[in-house]
Image (cartoon, rainbow over all chains, first blue to last red; front, side):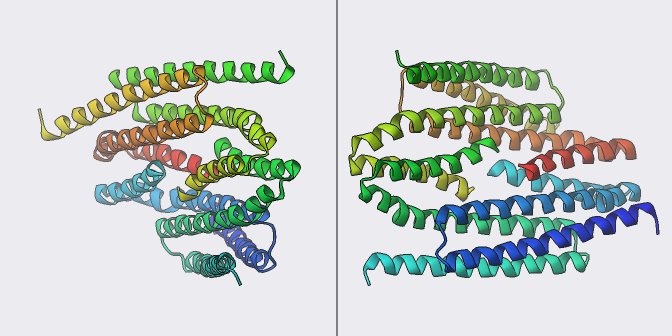
Length: 98
Length: 98
Length: 98
Length: 98
């Protein structure tokens, strides 16, 4: 097993653990609302969950760049390279449309 | 039961349903990663979950404004009013710090 | 002149200086595009300008909270208090709609 | 002059016009603050300026994708392609760090 694939599977493990924690946080907010917890506390918690999701997005993007993007470059296939670029640009564009 | 409290409990029900759907979506992303689904699809899904959470935040804020904020105003208690205002300003401030 | 109004006019001075710097940065981006500077550098600069604007928003919000919101609370007028709260909630709501 | 370069210079013209309008809007906010205009109006205007800047970012990104990214792909040079990809990923990453 190469050094890279170790890093990759470690990173995937980390993302999975984060997502499971996020799932628990979402369930926690359900309980907060059912228990009529103060709205501001609920909003604070929801905002923390969104930040946690953004951290996962950052990890997935790193994965994407090391695997899919790198393989498109090594493929030497212009169509595949263009497709990868377009996907990244489309993702970026969504943020500018906000 | 007044008209307002019906609206309130309807809205809370709606938020709870949305959160349960979000919980399912988070579990779905776990399965996507375990199934080695394409990173861009995972990123798209994570972004959809964040939007869904923002919609819940909007609902909770409406709740907050109709219940807690209104009750602070009717209380006539300047300290409580100031506290409510400060909380809203602190929430807003976080968005400007982004 | 009270301590508070000194702070207030200092803060306003700071916002005005920041905005004048931002105006210069926007002019700088015009020159970058006219000079065919590299797109990524232009994007980085545009992103820096948005951050600078957010910092001004934070300052203005502080001003608002110390002046307008405080005066609404001291007025004891529920209609004015409700109006101030509604404005803050409407601003917040925009961020959740993003 | 090819069809593409017409599009390009039209788009650049559009970005320049938008930026000049933005420069005027920033000056307008300076006057609003000097004229002690209501904070909420100032905040609304600042938020409109940030949206206008995001629209320019979208245009610049389109430019980038049609010119620089396309030329990196056609170059067939893996180092240049990797560099372009890394820049896009770095930009995206900033949004996830927010």
